[in-house]
Image 1 (cartoon, rainbow, N blue to C red):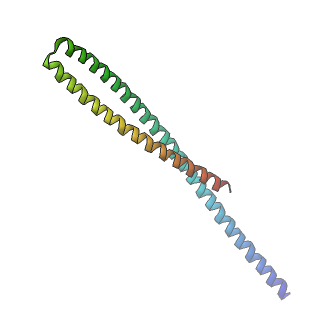
Image 2: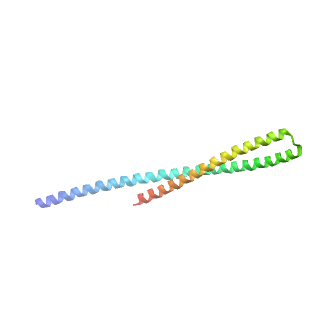
Image 3: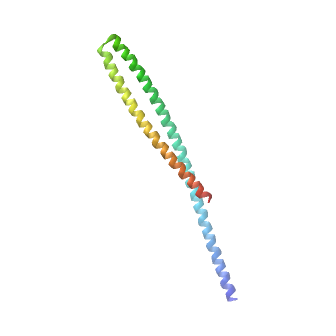
Length: 134
């Protein structure tokens, strides 16, 4: 009888330990799923940010082309009229273009950083999902 009671107590203790371990694993699984969902939201936000940066870059490229076109027109005026006011306009146009190109370079750098962040978030999300499935 004493041995049976000892074995029964040991079995009950083992069942309790296994229940606690199962509860812990379920909690960890829930935490991993929450983390994966948060990463999924970050991924969506990063995609929106990249889209905005791409739009900014496209606008900047359009502005550069427009500025180049104006420069070309101004050069033609200089050749035709050779007036000092036209030269001043050309200098302003070059300065504007330099500012736009600087902004475009900054937007391009930000886009590259966002893409790198997006890749990192995607990899983390994939890892989190793999871990959650296990």
